[in-house]
Length: 298
Ligand SMILES: C[S@@+](CC[C@H](N)C(=O)[O-])C[C@H]1O[C@@H](n2cnc3c(N)ncnc32)[C@H](O)[C@@H]1O
Image (cartoon, rainbow, N blue to C red; front, side, top):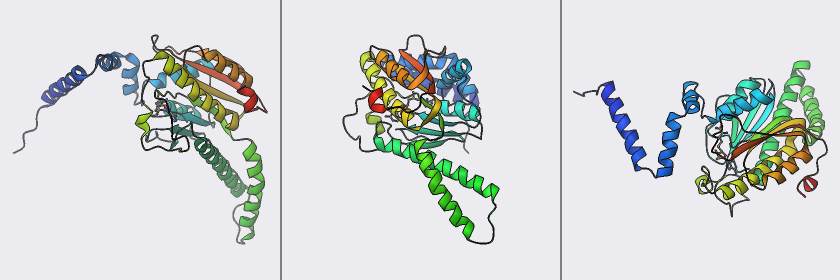
């Protein structure tokens, strides 16, 4: 007969397993594990079934700046494991749409669409545009069907297609995105594979920070620039952009670029961001019209 160990025995075994795991780690990962297990935001994230403590950073940013509204379309760059997307999905409600992009394979939270893709690839930008273009088409199709329910004859469908051709040209100039947000961080330098939007070896250039402040800073500025290029292309006039960056001497230049694109640019480090971390956030409001990327980046 199979003997089931008691719950308390299982608990003791689990505690021993965790402590062995911690003992076997390098001192930095041990510190990280210990800090995580005693961190109040990590505990609360578990209790609220949020994917990570990062949710609280976005919640605090939202509390201060009122970023989201029901019905908005949001792009979440570097969405995995999905805590920011969870927050955004809750705020924009089922009337809105969230698209998460991450170089890592990750199942998105409920109500969120996602793509595994590298934001440093031009193809990814095109795929994001296509997603929202398609979304708008679907919405307009639904509107058309509401006004004019499908009748017996085939002519209705023909008219619908013609109408959409006209709408699509307008849509190409203005995508319906209200918020582009980026929590991306990338430690390793990408030296090849820019042509590929999707990579099967994301861990080669992904993970947490390198611990080398200057390198982390420069890499984070690259990712912010990629996010800004996307925002210039797809964000509505008056739309909102927010990005995480690691502080360093180049962040002033990034700030200057942001100021060419948005009426209001603020730096904000939410209380949930650890004091010892160099991470910080730019929150930008009211995207300006007719932006020229060459001018922004020169
Ligand atoms: C700090 S995590 C994001 C956490 C997320 N905001 C959340 O709340 O769960 C940073 C993410 O950026 C992603 N990332 C880094 N570089 C990227 C790139 N070039 N393209 C797409 N995603 C990238 C990483 O895979 C990682 O999942």
